[in-house]
Structures are given as structure tokens and as C-alpha cells.
Length: 376
Ligand SMILES: Cc1cc2nc3c(=O)[nH]c(=O)nc-3n(C[C@H](O)[C@H](O)[C@H](O)COP(=O)(O)OP(=O)(O)OC[C@H]3O[C@@H](n4cnc5c(N)ncnc54)[C@H](O)[C@@H]3O)c2cc1C
Image (cartoon, rainbow, N blue to C red; front, side):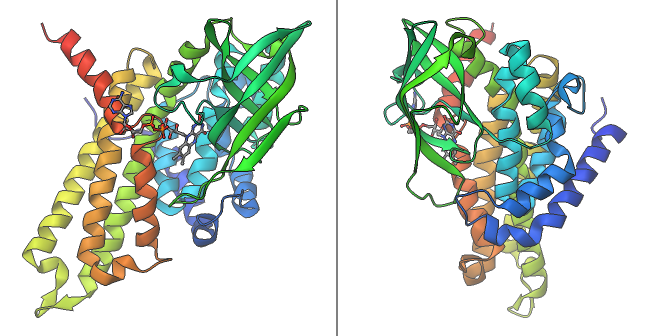
């Protein structure tokens, strides 16, 4: 057993860190925007990192997607800029169903544009009355001549307004299917979502009698739920990578501050309770990083079989990031509360991670079910 990253992964990590450092000065502005920051997007294009989201046959870097590589990039990006992390993550989340269930034409048309970040995708599951419980979706496709007609409203959709296409989860008779809808189709309207505590590029998407060809369905009728689970199987663990990066960044800010600030005659990092909190943070980050890398390696082998490990990594790392950033604010005292500082941004950005791509309570249900089945 070897716990070190090999040369291939060290190179990816190095590239990602270099890119993240190069855009760090743009983060305060980008992380307060709910539209795409063009400077970050241009830099992302130049970095070539989106090539990790597409197989080599369509312009990608590796023969197939490598969840550990994706985790390492998200860890590096989230430590510097949440906006860049989100843009990068969506290139994969919004294209994976095309990769595994798209027709040759769909793959040839869209995947090279994803690899070059020439186009941005959106993955539309959530609705006003359907979040964790996806079976409540009411968006539907109905046969219309030789194609379909799509109707319904989607909520909190990342990249809405900037995306070139939407992957839409919809009712299909008594089944659920996924369809690929070009963003320029007539009948699509994007309206802003309410602003959230950590600004994010997203919107509400209304589909009003949108005509789509029969070829727009990804996979077969009834494949919708399977494709959602397959996508989460690969990308849920990458949220854990991002959470580890966020927590590490918070810890480093807190260490730099408490090393130089003196109270009661010594640097604060030498005060017992402060030292203990920082030691706990480091320990928890290392634990989360290990389970994240392990789950990512397992997802690279079989992302469906390993979904419980991805859930454990996402649950453990996102909960850890919230605890860590909270302690880091505490040890920085009033300096951790100043709006616009990195610590304040990290504090807000940690919060949504426990809700999207599987809320912690929902993940616990799945993990507990597997546990009950496993123990002899
Ligand atoms: C920044 C951000 C980006 C997003 N991007 C996208 C996107 O690109 N595409 C998309 O489709 N959606 C997106 N979402 C929406 C996200 O997927 C949903 O917020 C998530 O699925 C949870 O649904 P909900 O918010 O409706 O919460 P609800 O389903 O209403 O749940 C609320 C809370 O209830 C609890 N809960 C729910 N179910 C159970 C249960 N069975 N047992 C125990 N407790 C439970 C949990 O604590 C949960 O947090 C995004 C959200 C955010 C914050």
C-alpha cells in the first residue's frame, strides 16, 4: 500500500495549483459574481484542465475520466477560487451523460467543445418541488410528431444563462429519462435565482413547449435515474476534493494569522486552546483527504459499485470543512469576520457543500442502508 501520489498525479496537482495561483487575484471579484467571470473562463480554457473531463477520443487527456485527477484539481481550485472550481466541475457534471449515453453525433458535436471549454453545459435535475426527492419532478417530455415536446421548470441550475445546452431530467410517460436540449431552442427562458450566501452562476430555467428531436433522449426511455446515479458516482467524490481544498486554505489563513498575532505574551498559536483547535483541524483535514483519495481511486475502477465510498467521502469532507472553517474563524477573532477577506469567503462557501449533490442527511440514509446490508 502506497499513500503517496505518483508522478502522474503529482504533475496534475502541480498544474492545477499553478493555475489556481495564477487566478487567485481574480477570486474576490469572481466569487461575488452570479454570472461567468470572463477572465477566469479564458484562463481555464488556456489551462487545458477541462480536457480531464472528456475521454481522449473526443479531445480529452486520458482514455477515460479519472476521478482522482478531478479531485486533485478541485482541491487546488477551491483553495483559491470557488468560481473557478465550479466552472471546472460543471464541465464534467454537465457532459458525463453524453459521454456514457450520448449518440456518436452528440458526442462528436459537444465533447470536444467541453474539452476546450469553448462551451459550458448545465445539468438540470432540481425543481421548485423536487430537490432530494427527484421522483417528484414534474418536468415532462411528451411525444410530438416525430420528436418530443418539453415542458417544466428547473431551479438552482448551475451555468444556466451561460450554458450552450441543458441535460434535463424529465418524466417520460411512467419513466424518467434524460434529454439533451440546445440552449438556443425556442421556448427556453432563464430567470435569475434568489442570490445565495456564496454567489454562484445559476438560474431558474423554464421550458415552455420546447420542441426537441427524438434523438435528444440520452440512452433509452427510462434510463434517467440510472444516468443521474452514474454521474453522481463519478462527481460526488470530487465535491469532497473541493471541501478538502477549502478547509486546507482556511487552516493556512488561520495559522499565518495566529503565528504573527501576539496576545497574553506569546503568539496565539502557542495558546493551548488555539493550538488544540488548529491541531484538530489539521488532523480532520488529513483524514478527509485520505478517504477522498481512496474513494476517488475506487470510483476510477467502478463508480457505481463504489458509490457508498463516494458518499462517505462527500459527507465526511463537507462536514469537516464546515467544522474547520468555523474553528478558523474563531481563532482569528474579529479578523475572521471582515467581509471581503478570504476567511469570510471560505466561511460562506463551505455551507452549500453540505446541501448540493446529496444533502448530508440523505447521504447518511444510503450509507446506513449499505451498512445494514453488509454486516453479517
Ligand atoms: C450552489 C448550488 C448549485 C446547485 N446546482 C444545481 C445544478 O446544477 N443542477 C441541479 O439540478 N440542482 C442544483 N442545485 C440544487 C441542489 O441539487 C439541491 O439543493 C439539493 O438536491 C437539495 O435539494 P433541496 O435544496 O430542494 O432540499 P430538500 O430536498 O428540500 O431538503 C432539505 C433538507 O431536508 C433534509 N432531507 C431531505 N430529504 C431527507 C431525507 N430523505 N431524510 C432525511 N433528511 C432529509 C436535508 O437536511 C436537506 O438538506 C444546486 C444547489 C446549490 C446550493
